Length: 448
Ligand SMILES: [Fe+2]
Image (cartoon, rainbow, N blue to C red; front, top):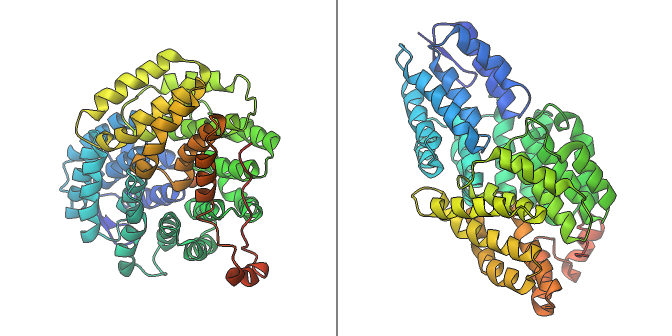
């Protein structure tokens, strides 16, 4: 017997309550609200044959981007496979995609999700997971195009349509269609104020355009949706901190770090990455961050699975290098070398992560010219590392700071000019428009 989810996708179960739990859990997952596990876990205990429930649980764990979640996700997939009920074609297809992802090959999982969504464009779980994989794998245009592919199968009256718009907004932003991205993102938030991914997309637009005041206003207007009990709480606070950093408000940034970015006992790997990136940006400005690096390095050690996700390894390197943790850096180097030699996503990530790690070590050691030599050639291919433009900007900032400290004025100036590329051009042609627009860009604060 099957029931249907809110989009009409069949769910294999004999219990109506399981289908209800699925809908509720997926809605929480779509908006990063707490606590989807508290809904789906008891449902699966009562209905262990609920195939889509196990797939949802596995997908939510994989969507954390945390390699520690691969094994428990695999166990959920085992439970789905052990169900005595016959899976639907959608469930079979999704199961196969998540299996290869849980086995450590996000590339192959993404490719299977790609095909899956052609046949099942209204599978909102699969869509969000594919969107997440696109971000992790640096498939920037797919952040936009994947959503464009499914939109003809959706209408505004569909449950969850706003989440599709939220993903579209982020994809448009990453493809530099800022005005369109902001319009779609604000529309998504108007439809569903708790859609923190859409909130986040608009924050990215403000970040990329240097619109600090607009960004802070937006985050304050929406903070009720994301500042607590939300999977994006740390990351959206990180975005808010970047806005204050652009104003040179270092005390406010440190306060935000201590209140909302510093890893909690239950923090996932991406939270540690945000914390590392924020401290690094402060340190490059000459701000004394005290013993925070040492505490963070200990958290990375506890997190522990290196050589699995290049983006995470780079951020761990920031923490280990700045904390003077040579053993941690050696761990990363060994893991990075091993991972780059085996098939899978790290072969692409490693081409960025390995030289970036060495460049970070050189920067901390005061070998600024060496940092430039290692990291400047990586910048054109840094997209392969995954993450957003705003996150990878840290690499450009590091080269720029190394250029400054090594006296390479021409390179510093060139990168300073590059930094302005996303801002609306200030030319006589545009100035009349900008002077009457609330979206006029503000110049970012120069590196100290
Ligand atoms: Fe972001």
